[in-house]
Image (cartoon, rainbow, N blue to C red; front, side):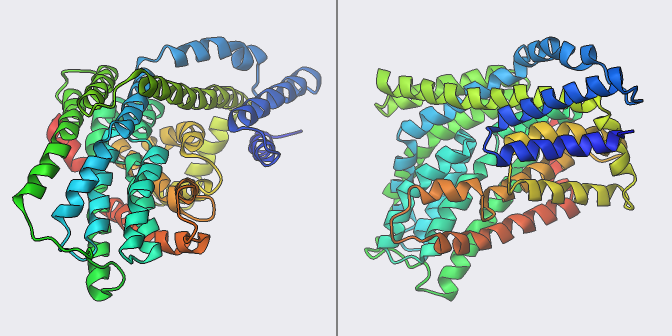
Length: 454
């Protein structure tokens, strides 16, 4: 008789087979779910299988599950944050910041790359949309850095790695989804936002340290600007004028969540309205811009919710054929303690990042492993930050890191695929070092939320 272990393994295998056949992820998830719902029904009704499966308890309950999904107020924050990010990308904030910072750091070797990191931090905290940030930073920085004789790998690696900071630096849509899927008040959106601040800034500091150190050890690697300008207070004032509106918006969104003045959904509305105001101040607010932003937001959120629905079908059937028990027993039976279990899950997440987008991994893997991991006494906030850092690393990892494809689309013809791969490698090492640091020193993730929320 077919065991639950065989059914669960076959279901995952079927999902990956559908992916390799070219089906979109949402359709692959739904197709695998419905196929194994039929198989489960036939095994129980006609072959007297002893597996626990009911059609009504799986497919029959989908309407209630889907309604609960679309009625989830927390998920309303997703389109708001996405719209906020797209509007800020179109408001001209990044261009003003880049112009002011390049003047401010003109005397520093590698100063242009350092400027990219700082602009990237502000973009990450403003948008949280990886694709948009990578493309925008690539368009703004790669050409000028190459014209200043920067190393090709450093130029493209900096734009790629910094653009990915939006995954971890709040307000991140990844952290919103993580909080929703974890389903525990100990890992609320506000706590996860605060927990990600220190690791995110550590990543940015590591990037800057690598750039400056490389520039001084190898002057031709990242030279200072050809036309060196003495420091002037005018450059600092220009930077503050460009940065303060974006910073005010960031602190308004995060501060309202952390202080309890607004829920995550209400704060996302504040962010969307603030982005419209900034676009207006920069004279970029018109019907064309708003229409394009709304269209892009609709496409993005439709993609996310399509995967949500497919994952709901897949997860419902997976539980129906005993998937929860199989995965729980698999984790518990590992010959390690809680720490070893977390390492195994992070390794699995890292490998899956080669093939799947972070949304699929978050929606499929996290709900399956999180309850068992928490039952072993693992801190939910610490685990969530490690999970997010691991997913962030997968964005840059060749050969299928999404950020590599984004940056390739805006690179000059002089940049080859080899330059991209070699350029991102040092930044991947930095990401792994920060991941290891948070793993060893859990206070890096838990200290700030504990201080603020206690």
